[in-house]
Length: 117
Length: 117
DNA sequence: CAGAATCCCTGATGATACTG
DNA sequence: CAGTATCATCAGGGATTCTG
Image (tube, rainbow over all chains, first blue to last red; front, side):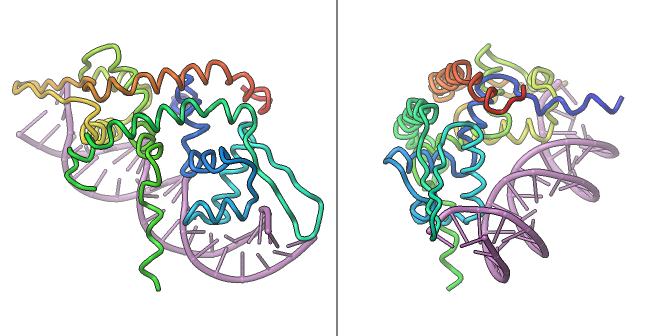
């Protein structure tokens, strides 16, 4: 009876799926950066204060796999790689916007409870 | 110069704040369960297939701190504790619904790319 | 410039046992 | 019943080094 304890990794509902797409540590921030338009790797890293190369690469790869961002490599020296939102990525904007609105509206309530900025 | 590398923990924008509220491993699932109405601890644990007592307790406490759920303890033996959404918790529903819609609409695209259910 | 590779540590999660 | 406490595990993420 040891082979049936692993089903907690299945996607229980679509909300979870969506959460996996935007739920990474830096993903919403990356999306926000790319909402400004195409950006290069270095630009992203400088914008995302504190992110390491490894994490940026990793998150970008995952997002590329999910089809929310596009990666364009220019075959030149020195290398140049541009990242941008795909249509699928852009379709996430209403969700991020809703989350932003919620944060703005209710952040004060939460902070009141926590007695701490 | 070792005292200024810790600023990556600050909340960079309200989207991140909101994500912290619903981004926990089980939180959206807990919210969904409580959207059905008041539930007891044991009910929740049975509904959330695979969650441990520890994790359920932990997630519930965090959500209570954030003010999205209410915890009502009945002083009786055996103990009875009921959990429910607060108005703040209910105000998250549009976001979850938007995420659900997105998942339904775009899940197929993602799965196409991944070649794998 | 844009990574890949490596090592390492901490926090998140799980498993188990105990309790009012 | 609804937890708390403790120990074990394991992946997420950081720091550093190397490279086409």
